[in-house]
Image (cartoon, rainbow, N blue to C red):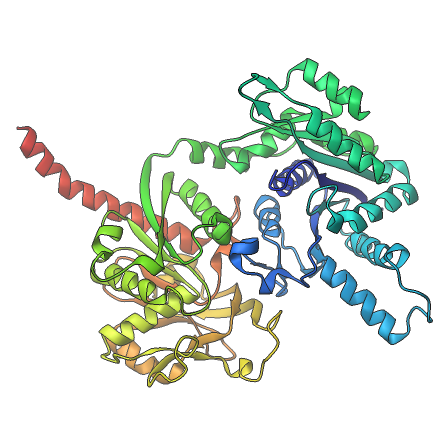
Length: 549
């Protein structure tokens, strides 16, 4: 029977429950256990697919086509396993299921209430992944903050499971904040005490308290928290700020968090954690031999979580290349023909990010043109690829009014058009082309060199596609379709001849990049950017030397 760990949070949001959950899972996995993580979110949206990136950050897409919370990206990046639709559940999905059952008469005319009907559905979902016997431990992250009205049904479900399960099968880890008051020069435990009190009032008692802190916890502070929060002193865990999220598993190992869980569960069949690859990655990340500056051209750059998977993919690719990747955010709305050289002139590479809608697209097109004409390594993802197609159509093919029908339904040259299967779709949530699809790569192409394969699978999230009616014109002019879907013929990858690196992909490669398996396109893009930087520095060096003489 699977064991269950529930991770709750208190005091404030954004403390890092997802990172703590992923780090604990990584340690348990490294000790030989089969582990997965799931996220329960308290908002009433059915899934994050219709949420604005400014509201919720990026929408992470799983192999099976589920639009999920971005924390599932952390789970996959840490564990190198695929998550599914079952790994992310929202209040909206819970209520939708219960209401549908009520409409079908499943409750035989009974009054439908939060307890037991809503909490029973929550519990059913919480236990779902553990029923097949595929996992030894299921970690469940409860979104929101203890005390929020939205979280109450989930906390109540945890309380019931704590009561129903054998004590050695269920564990609660509570993440809280120990603020440091600089004026008083001391850490304060009162917010943690109140947070645990709130949780206890709801009937849930934490087994472990993980304390986010800027300053190290003294033994006195640990003893105080243990005393007032009714846990053992060794169950008070310090989670100090780290230079990178990938250090957190090692910090949690030092605090013996994984061993606390194994002791609670009476699990004895485990070995020392195998983290060789993880530590090698961290060494390369901390001690790079070179650096590059990459421009991230997007329209949601005010919120870093909007491009979370892209940023983490750069971290993975940078470590492989032993190269520090500095990201410069450039808002596409503010790029013009007049200022593009000023904004992009010091970059070693350019990534045009995905997105939706007409806002900022002209700035993206100008940025693509700059990269193409100046031989600057370019990488376009989804909408970024489509902008590269539009720019090429306008400037090289001479189709001055070429556009996407997403932005201009009346364009005379719709080089990007709505997919045939999307033309009758009216509902917005979960109706895009979602999940993993195959792609056949042309032999001898740059994409072939990057992937070292002719068949791949990548994840998608889009409604518009390259219009194949124009494909012959593009390929005759030098932009080739080096990757296509074998069934539909949809263009998945475009690349330019006679350019050091100019690649656009319709899919989202960032969604499959992990610490132990960095995404190949990102790896080669950073390699090309590093070579671009080296050449530029080599040209500058003689000038500087001459001036010194």
